[in-house]
Amino acid sequence: MQALNRIMTNICAENLEDTKNFYTRLFDFSINFDSGWFVHLISDNKNLELGIIQRSHDLVPAAFQNKPNGFYITFVVDNADT
Picture 1 (cartoon, rainbow, N blue to C red):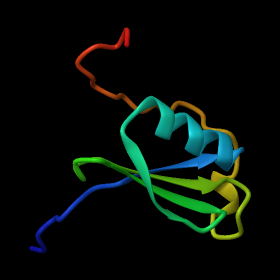
Picture 2 (tube, rainbow, N blue to C red):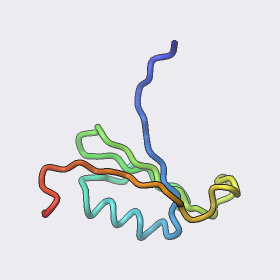
Picture 3 (tube, rainbow, N blue to C red):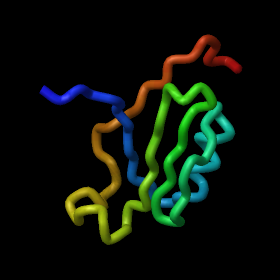
């Protein structure tokens, strides 16, 4: 069996720039890679990763280019009010 090194969540975004700005302002994510259609965010402590891909990009299968239906991400933080 192959050892698992990491798991990264990828989300499809209608507006890549707004989505990238939302997560970098809200959390301690830094932009690790930005191709203009895909952005890789990583936390300052390197424990968390988030990929954001332009929903309409050719690499996203047509079946996944629709708006999400029934998907959510949970972020656990010390103080949700801040």
